[in-house]
Length: 239
Image (cartoon, rainbow, N blue to C red; front, side, top):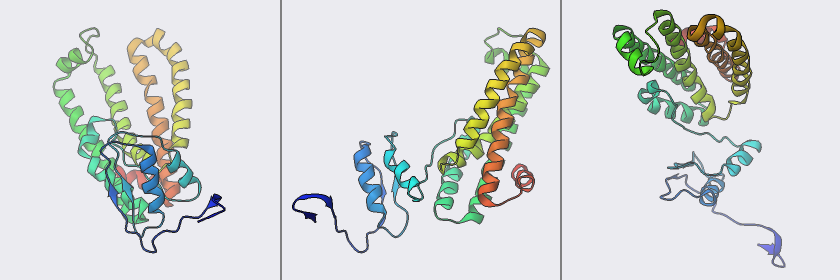
């Protein structure tokens, strides 16, 4: 409906529109936007499963107007191969406002990433010299201290990736990104002092700083979101 064929235009819709789980053969932002806008009139959750990411202007606009828009993305670590399905369920639980389940699934995701990474590190410890030679293409001699520092960074990063993937899926990642950026700048400046004195070992130690900063920020953001004490959540998520 319109006034003399000009905007504003009113588009009448169906009274009861069922939600859909839409997987386009060819991802197009325009089609995705149409499905998402139609989903505003649905009872339930409307999903668009894109084989490739397209422009997200509609999702950002909907989020700005208070609509719950969530993303399910694979994390980037080897450990996340084992926890991807759990990550999807975590994002879904938040979208459906099942906060208790959301918390438990996030704890499970952190535990999965952490313990799988620890198992990988045990294997690296058993075959350290061989793996280290392959890892560095034989350019750096095996150093137990260096391996220990790299292992610590790997464990912290695996735990952090679990939390970051959850926050990324629900659009609560900006504070973590800022903390990681600031810590990375600080680490680079410290590396200028550490590398001349301690070599590669100094670099490995300094590079743990951004991982710790991102992890701490992610814990604080998540706990504020679900009203949990950070210490209690951290203790449960690593056991």
